[in-house]
Length: 331
Image 1: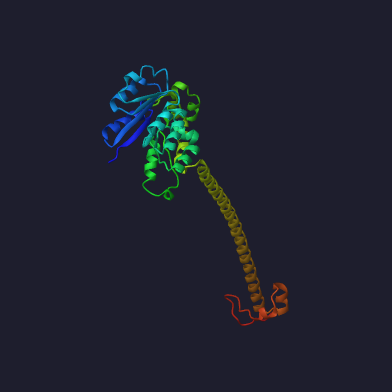
Image 2: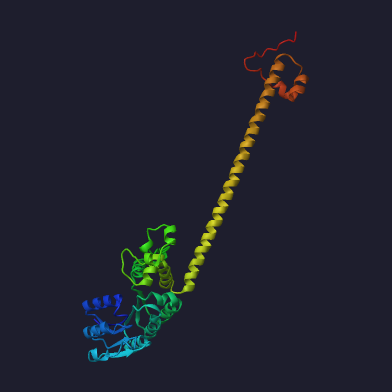
C-alpha cells in the first residue's frame, strides 16, 4: 500500500496534535510537513518524533535557534508566507488546515494548486472565502473533507445516501454559558458571565461566540460552502425556499378566503331554506283555509279571492284533515 504523505498546518494546536496521534498509529500515513504559528518548542519536539521533510514557523522571532533543534534532513521555513511555501515545496497528498484565522487561506489555495486533498479544520477560510475555495477545488478535482466535528458528522451522514433525500440540515448547539438564561437576564450578561462555559475550556473569542451563538452563524456559512459548493447555489436554494414560503402563504390566504366564501354560501343557503320553509307553510295555510271554506260551501270565486288559488287548484282540493268530504249547505 502506498504511503499517504500528509502536511499539517497548525500541528501544535489541538487538531494538529490529534492528527499526529492518528498518524503514529497508522503505518500507511506519514507526516511529510509540519507548520505552526509561534510554538517553536513543540514544533521541534514533533519534528524529532516524526522526522518530516520540512517544518514552517510563521513567527520569525520565535524561530530563532529552531534549526539547531531539528533532526537531520528536516528543512526549516520561517515568516508569514512559510506555510504557503511549505505546501508548494512538499507537494503532499493531503493538507490538513488547522490554523486559526485568515492565515489558513493562502496555504489552502496553494494546496488546491498542487492537487492535494484538503482536510479542513479551519473555519475562517470557508467563512470568508468559501465562494472562492470551493469552486477552485472543484475545478482542480480536489476533494474537500471537513474535519471539524459538526461538519464532519454532516458530511458522513450525507455520504450514506443521496443528496436529493435531504430536505434540510440542522446544526445543533450546546448553548454556551447563557443557555439556560431568559432574555432579560441574557441582555444584562457581562463578559465574565459569557466566558463561563459549562463544559469546555476554550479561547475567549470562541467562548463568547458560543454564548452568543455567533459560532453557529459562522458554521451555517461554512456548511453552505460544503453543501452547496458555491454561494450562488446556496442563495439559489434559499431563493427556492423563499418562493416556496411565499407560495405556501398565498395558498393559505386563498384557503382562508375560500373558507370565508363557504361560510357566506352556507348562510345564504340557510336563509334560502328558511324562506322556502316559510313559503311552504304559507302555502299549506292557504290550502287548509281553502279546504275549510270549500267544505263550508263558500263560492269558488270568494275562496280564490281570499287565498289567491286558481279555480282548478280549488277544485282539486281534498277535504281538510278530520272533516268529511260531503258538502255542507250554508243554511
